[in-house]
Length: 60
Image (cartoon, rainbow, N blue to C red; front, side, top):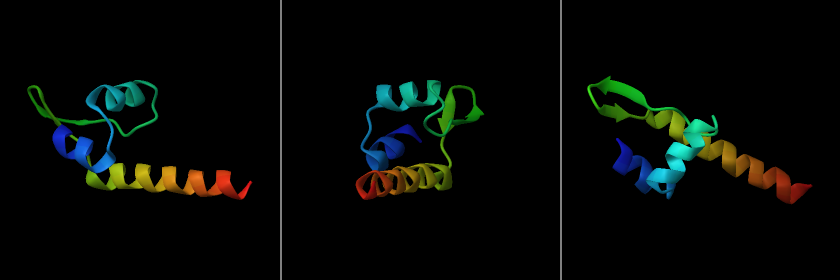
């Protein structure tokens, strides 16, 4: 759910949705109605990719 994604990622709600619109963050999954959630594995993979990219930038 969004509050957990905000807590885990440290991003704001608006930043998360901005990144989703630019295909730079995992998209939410509809649970029906207005309820949405994110797969923890996708959010974790996104965070790991960001960490790896940072490490590559520092090595360059």
